[in-house]
Length: 335
Image (cartoon, rainbow, N blue to C red; front, side):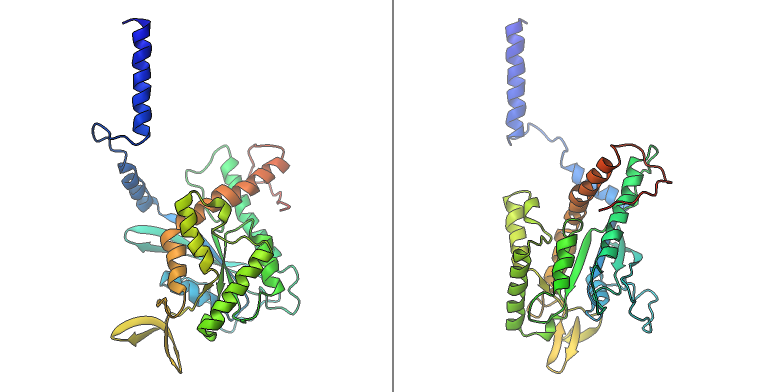
């Protein structure tokens, strides 16, 4: 075969590959699509971590909402919390972990609670212990990642999602709400929710939601899902609908009532049963679908690829470059 023929053959081969990459029909079955099943099997074997933080003043139903989301007693208060426990004088960070299994898939769920937040007369800088905790989890992961002998699977305690509970005042955001979200929105995925939204009428609720959205925008607060991380037009379209719905006006309850022959989660009032999972009553179902059924993996990816990478780049830059960090290294980040 002449050199000219060889070049012509190579060009045809390259052209064929390019055409196939562009979406032409393959001549036979290859099996590329089995990667999804392979990933599913691996996930079912190993399971995965999901860490959710709840922040807001006491009395807003944070523990109840988390229990309602995961349909089990997963909150700190459900795990041996005493009703006699006093509100701490400073913000504390307490976490509890559970393994939840559904359909053969195991999830290690860690719920991080922040008792004392927003409960003092002077709440100046009460977000600092929370920010410190978030960065400490990044630091733990980083130390494991840059060790010469790394674990096959690095334990992931990084906070993937922060549910921020806004009191249902019907007026506007407090300065504390603005300061917290502004300061932490670049290190954790913040999802704002209006707690105990059944204390407002439908009209009051809508007006309050619009006012909160406007205030978030005016203060330059980025909540999840952030516009800049939309991958494509389809993502943007889906996420725009979610962003227009935020903050989610929710009601939580772990009590069941009989409604039209069905057992439903709800809250009993003098006017009837408020059904937690009824989209006509509140937006709990939309929050659950968004948080667990459509965006859970994306929350983890944004945490790893954006928030953790930002921390990692600054930490290693301050540390003089990428080199192994020993377990004795107790240097803390100034972030």
